[in-house]
Length: 408
Image (cartoon, rainbow, N blue to C red):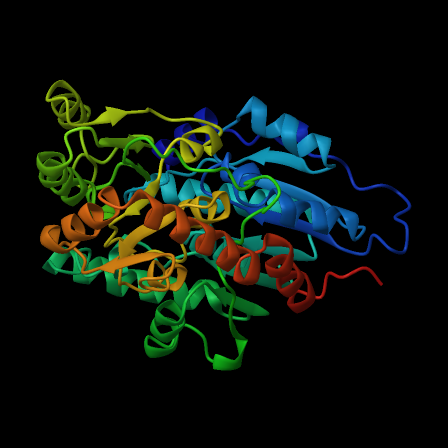
């Protein structure tokens, strides 16, 4: 208990940032909503338009994340959303830290007394769902952006992985108990939720086409036409297909020496599943890779490539990075797994390749490296598909309507 108390003391909730509920709430501001994330910047990178819609509909919204990021606070404040910090480790299992997260969430929810809690990604869903139940929050709507690494083929390949998966299923069931709706980004995730009986009433599952993409913010940009430039944007996990991308790049460069291969993303703290800084530096020193680091704005980098590549075998929902590349107008090469495959019409706006198959990936990259006009034409088709299927405003219409948050 002393260890638990010490953890709480060093990871305090920033309650001073929470806006007090007005003494007299206008009739149209009926709902107080709490949105839970495992990465504070994702609130503005991925959820800003949804948060705007909630505020515009007259609701009082508090967004919650583990990092006290000044940019995030400022961006949320500009649209009328409050921010609260909660301790939450994004990866790994630490009973003390995880109990502290549930306790802090429970305290925050008891203080705010929200009508609705909306968690997304694995840990906020599990710990936020459980904390919301104990705090007596009546409405709970979940955004399953992907079931997580433990539900991937690689994640459950070992005995330990299978045990963690079973524990995760048990926790998901507890979190989803009494849910109003569970949004899934693809049919494979919905099927797993049904198969593992994570919800008692399967009619609560609703499939939506990812988080959507802001077509105006990620405006079309003509691709370069002088040489092949391939770009991979992802958290630097092995399951994102980074090792396969590097090996395929070696083969493509043998045929097209002027081709450039870029990676943009941040390192993961887990050395078992992450790509190391030493690995990245080795590929840079080899002259094979241009490592772009991390950024708050991917648009200039998308504009500078011809082809976007994500050879992921991670358990994706629908990768936001692909949607952004499509909106900018880029040909896409990704895997045939659920989530990734929802973004590509093979031979129309890109190619689907077999996961972990370097030969398959290299063939697709060689095809586009040798035919930049084809890559440009596929990019136009990507933009059209993004407009038809993945417009963030259309996606948010679905979410707002199903969560009963539309303006009266």
